Amino acid sequence: GDSVTQMEGPVTLSEEAFLTINCTYTATGYPSLFWYVQYPGEGLQLLLKATKADDKGSNKGFEATYRKETTSFHLEKGSVQVSDSAVYFCALSGQGGSEKLVFGKGTKLTVNP
Amino acid sequence: DAGVIQSPRHEVTEMGQEVTLRCKPISGHNSLFWYRQTMMRGLELLIYFNNNVPIDDSGMPEDRFSAKMPNASFSTLKIQPSEPRDSAVYFCASSFYTGGETQYFGPGTRLLVL
Image (cartoon, rainbow over all chains, first blue to last red; front, side, top):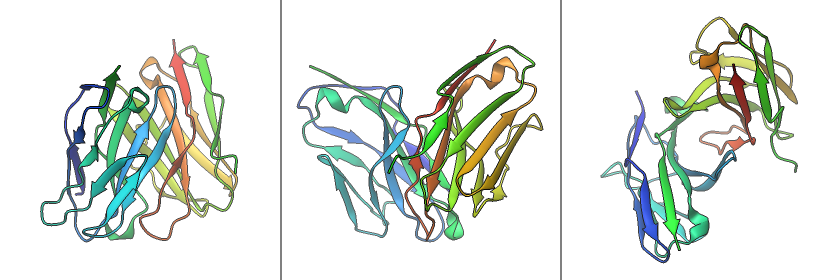
């Protein structure tokens, strides 16, 4: 079945450092890919998404490119801030047009001043 | 829009008691999802509805859990009887499904069963 694998955390960075969180997937067909972010004590919220190969999703300085050849959707940000501290989830839409999202286990990011 | 609304935000109960969690999806959305999040198991999909009809309940852990969606603007997740291992954060999410659509999450209900 469909699955998402993202890098184990936690990740700790200093402010203004470069961030990469790796995400690879296994899926049939052409799923949409998502990054969600969960701030402490809150629900998940969409950070960015891409719906087809080579699409780049971007938001709040974060970017991720849908790479079908490597089945990857790595999240990057050039300069992180303390306010980016959160848990980041990679996800894909279910196969066969299913409404279900398949989530990775999440990566906790802590940014120190 | 007010977003997905969940109540209560926090619930503390004793083992054996009935717990009812409530969710109001975003107006106009036709799909609704219930998730459970724990440190041990991460984020798990329990059940989801499309146009008020349960589509997939394979994630519901056991018969103690039940979910209903009597209309497009309201859903409940009930646990009866509750057990300490049910302690978790329960999220409701909604979407307008046309294929690969974004799910919008509520703030969650933090449940503690003593």
